[in-house]
Image (cartoon, rainbow, N blue to C red):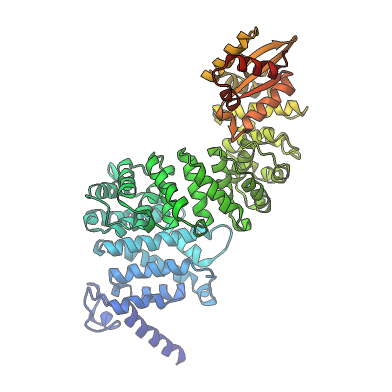
Amino acid sequence: MQHQASTTTTTMRVQMVLGKRKCEEMTKNDCSRCMSGCNRYTKNVHNFVYVNRYEQIDELIQVAFEHEHCLSPRNMSAVWHRLSRLMTASNHSPNQQQERHQYQLHDKLNTLFAYTIDELKEYGTIQLSQSAMGMAKIIKAVRFCGNGREMNCHQMFQDSLIGSDMKRKDSLFQAIASAAVPLLHQFDPQGYSNLVYACAIADAVPRFRGSTLFEHIACTITALKDLRTFKPQELSNVVWAYATAQVSHSRLFEKVADEVTVYRHLGSFNSQNLSNIVWAFATAQVSYPRLFHKVADEVIAYRHLGSFNPQALSNIVWAYATAQVSHPHLFKQVAGEVAHRCLGSLNPQVLSNIVWAYATAKVSHPLLFDRLVGAAIARKHELSPQEVSNILWSYSASGIVESSLFAAMAPRVMTLLKHCSCQHIANIAWSYAVANVDSHGLFNKPFTNALLERMDSFNVAQFSQLYQWHIWQKEENSYTGLPLVFERRCYEVFTSLNPTISLLQRNVSSVLRSIDLVPKEEEVTQKGYSIDALVEVKGKKVGVEVDGPSHFIGRKPTGSTILKRRQVANVEGIALVSVPYWEWDELGQDLSKKQNYLRSLLGIR
């Protein structure tokens, strides 16, 4: 009797909470199970919001299944939305009842999925965007929890919404897109934003003949007179979605950029909005420096960086480095903020993106790099091949040798080697060559085998990196190195790069001649290095390197500069002297000063 009473209570609760919708196929008796006399489109706002009272996935699925034909589009979209909230909650291990009835729940979820697909033509714009968002968030939660954790409810949603071959997911979003396109002129800004955002996080790009849903929405948005009805989050979500889905649409990005730079005060944008916008433009490779400078000025002048979470700070500096927009003041502010935080909470992607951004933008901040060493070592077992590669490359490219970091990463590289791409392997090898630290047996037969397996897939820059690594192995008298056929190929690539002779270099060579030296410009050494000017002083060859701004970060040499100087001296036996651009510039147009400068540098009295 207690069980029967519980069932009756649940049925009454369903009637109160979910509302009614009579299906044409239902008989009068069937309909009376819900509430006699219910109408096809009965909707009750007060009843609708009660869906949020359900706290268990299995309970909500059961209730929705029992009254599937009574659910209005508004109710059904609310069910998916609530399920997504329950899926992303912190703790949702299946309870005993869920374990016992897993197969039944799976079938019921499949029924709800099929029913939703069948009824999408009845959905309005709000219900379409809400359903898309709910299902996309469920899919995201399933992927997030799919790394080794056995959770029955997640497996159930994986099977029902995604499918082993992604066909269910693709058919779902294709159906949503087909229902949405005829109604696009009726969507509000939030609807546009939610629809493309949902597709992006679900990794779905619904396609039509000669077009996509993203193209339809972009054309609709760009046809609007202006975007003033779009809230900051809606603007940022739209461009974020296109960038994430890797869908290019320059006119849409330009319209958003014009809206943000010309008509908007950025005080209404929160930290997440700002970081997402610049991240999206950088990822989509849409150049709009005016937008980047406005965002940077806003962050520096009006924002307390403590309000930015680590991901937002990482995205900002990554975006500026990727877009090649220089803003040293912004980088200085962000570095100061990050360096003084508790770095143990930084996830590996954030950590690697931050150091990569500073190395790529050639912005020096020793304190930041020093603080991040410990954080990287502490989380080394969590690092992916991309993250290991980024971190090692960033320190080496910046000319910062942290022996403890390179020693700690060697075992992790060995573990990840089979998962490394050509770029990862080349960057890692080059980074150790620059750092010139003990690799703890990293570069052995398995490493060279990994190189040979990928030999036909390396690009020009990577062949050059591997050649410099090979020279380092010889520099260290190591038995490891490139096989002869691989070495020759790398050498050919390394020496095929045509150097550019700058005006500064020509000026230095001219002054060398004026002091009775005969400089050989861009002289190629036996190992393939090109020396700016090779002269003979007191019977010995001396290389004169004219180092412009690209050779330095601040006034410290880059990793590439350090490596060339060391290898030419140690392997080629040629002494190198450097003419830094700022020292030469300080001499002005005084020929006598320039002559004395070079004589002193070369030890000529």
